[in-house]
Image 1 (cartoon, rainbow, N blue to C red):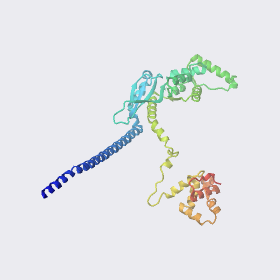
Image 2 (tube, rainbow, N blue to C red):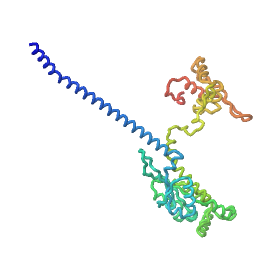
Image 3 (cartoon, helix red, strand yellow):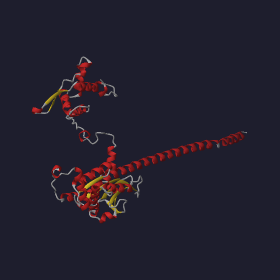
Length: 391
């Protein structure tokens, strides 16, 4: 019997063993799933961080491509074949190549013109082959054509500078046209100088003088005066947005083309700077700030500039207030010693402001208006208080 009992106990013990592996298997599965889930989350976070880093690197590359000195590397200058056949075209190409611009010869919508393309900086590491057209076109107008248009403008014919510009603008919709003409100043300088006699002496009215000038222009074809050029350019500026640059020599033309290309390349960077939203961004005296040394030197200038931020406050007025109260704390203490609100408002009103030196020196007072505004600014706890609107 004892042996039978042992067998039963043993058999009952072996029957309960399979239940433990089932529980441990479930635990192992749960643990493994948890590990896999955490691994997936870590991988997802890693991918997200890599994407954020790549976006930052792409943004840095795009910003670098817009900086002066770097943006020229991403520009391509397209020159019309006709431009290289006229006088001055060779100087333009040589000047652009000397400035390390990539140049190509392509037919342009406006004959004898230059256009620009910018290489698109991709968000990926590999190089991009996409190019974006820039909204600028520079056309070279030969001197003979310019003078011919001026002569026809004097005679009232159709082929004038304005008609030429209108036709050119139609060919490049959405773009900004600029013209360059070489030799106008030299031509006008070598024109024979004629002394102008009074109209009463020669018995001609202004209308008759205009008719005579038109006859001369119609007869010679190229006898143009400086007044004719100025009138034609003024008419063009008033009716269109096209600018005309009159250049003296072919070398100056090459320099102008290089300068124009640099301006086109740096235009996006300058537009981004203009959109910073700070009206004082380009004011060197403000954006530079004041250097304050550990000894405290410079704090007086900071206090003076703070007062100058008020409307209608000149440097002389700020200097007078700072001389009387060299720090904001001293002014606050003076306000605390006042017995009434009215006394605080008029505390600075009688401070004398000296302007000029010698016999031209003048003096005036700070006045109650500025005194009251400074008092409000120094003591008010209302962040929305408009100092100029309070009375």
